[in-house]
Image 1 (cartoon, rainbow, N blue to C red):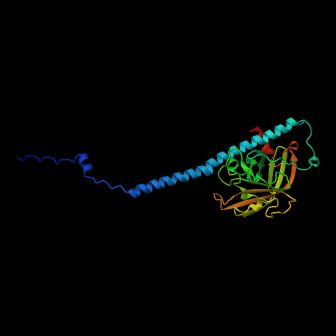
Image 2: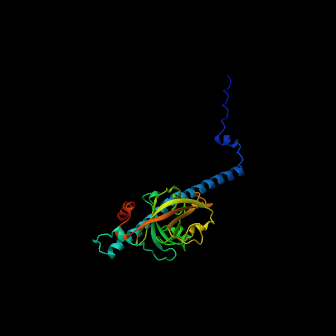
Image 3: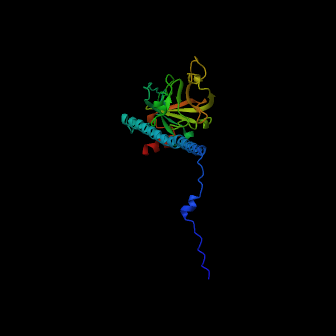
Length: 267
């Protein structure tokens, strides 16, 4: 009788693993993965800066503008008999021209219905970063250009994207669109007329008669300026409006923005 054969030895897990060959690590592969990860991070940061952060700043700027607008209306009511009837249009007289403020001081609120019912932004003196990059301001008035309602050129600037994107939709303005400017004295109505694209050096758009240095102005103009195209500073997009009318604070806001102003007072 023969002895039963002994079962073959089963290799242990340690033995099986021990016979595996590790794949060599590619330095270029690791570097490529790191670069891809870094690229994704950069894109996410840009998206945050240009969209999410932009949206938050825009909301803060609109809230600040609403507070200023509401305070001017309240101060006007305190300064006069609130029960007195508003003046008739024929009694408005010439536009009241504000004094030139100090740098970064707010003096107006801009309303552009074409940009949406939530759009109202503070206009402050100067076009430096303390104004254009501010979370409470956002629209800057070019020094040495005219004030709202004044004969000549009331010229302002804002970012097209980032820091609230105050002029994000400037290219969508259509002939006849209203552009309203509120100051402590009242409301100035302009009507959009034309768009122009110029090089960054085309500063003659800021002249009292845009594009005509040395000319004597006869009209009251508003000029909105921003960078173009989106996310670029290659050129400037310029929107011109012509003065139509003005009315004092006591007369109430123009009908088109009355609901906006009423809503901001409640908010």
